[in-house]
Length: 345
Picture (cartoon, rainbow, N blue to C red):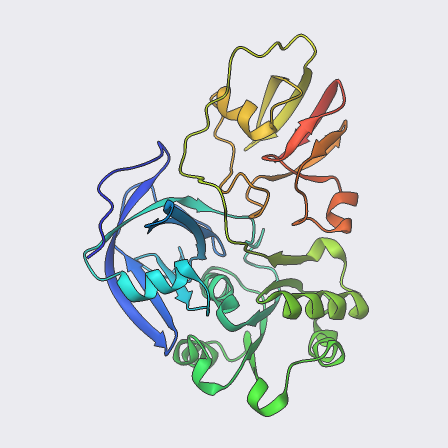
């Protein structure tokens, strides 16, 4: 029995495990009881606080496989990795009745419009956020959906029965292509391009191991997909503690700081932005509910668009060259260079 008995952040949620579902030999779904103030969008993730004897705790991000449109209870699905402390702890220890501390649902890997035609690529446990998108779009949207799902072998296919049921229920809207490495080898860029070529007008989403994602990116580029219609989800193990509340010093001299106009959820905020502080810290100090999760530049929850001005970022590896060319920045990493900036979330 593993129980979280207190919150370590003012933003934290305490979630009670309702059920553990064995999806495959190395993947489990953790279903949580209904709780207040748990709103999420298809494709988002939870950050769980996992106890550690060495560090007290570690933080790990796991995608929600449930759909806010079709499922009464939220669930995350976790697949073991050989050296994954978090995934093995979750699979070995959690049981019904346990309480887990989590940060609110977060992430930008979500369709802007569920009516869009969607081309989805998943490999292994990368199906988790994709499944949330599939169920939501089929239930509340009208577009066509094509899913390319790669796995090592048949026994490693997560949600196989559920996908089969959905394909039967929505035969004219959902196409599922299973790719098994045991039969077909690892999919090549040319093979992925062939899978994508008939869906050039769709909006593409991808999630899976790095090599798979790189191949899909190259395939979509070769096929002519515009960068703005390609979305990828990337997770990295967090080294810091996102459950620690941000404390922003009020003593820093703001005389040499910048000013910023920030658009968030339809509202405009005019801020003084000290040059040594990040945008997320400044917005939190001003009482603005800025989206963020890891504060390490690894999850992309705080990504926003720089419309005017210049910033410096400590870590921007999650953004590719096209993202940066489009003006995308990470609020948790951005510090002002220009005297005035304009930013939109």
